[in-house]
Image (cartoon, rainbow, N blue to C red; front, side, top):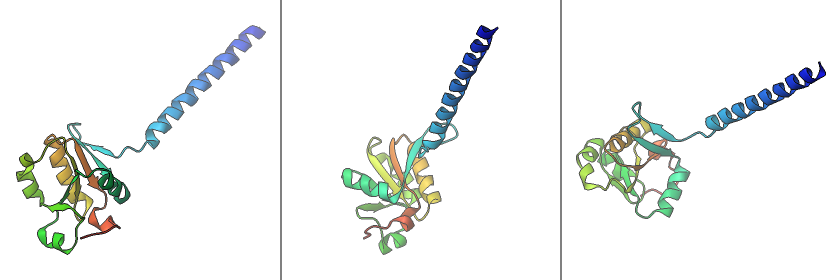
Length: 144
């Protein structure tokens, strides 16, 4: 009788250990907080980055192409250093001029505008696209 009780107690501990490992696994997945945004069909992805992350990206990669997708009037007022001004429509027309494996950072006046351009580039096969979260309004650093 005692042996059956020990066996059941041991099984209970094993089950609890498995449950704890399962819960920890779920928490790790939830808390990993991936910034990658995927389409419904998983055809494309781009990474959203904060101003701090964008600054590091620009400092460590001299070959990043920065697209300011606001209109020319807004661009003339202020823009990130080395940014190229292209509206969404212009960018869509000129995609063939840019290498699909190069690094690109996109920003606009808001996330909606930037996400639309990032989606379009990613769905066209561009693989290294970063979108500045919050647009130029969230950029606390030097502007031209």
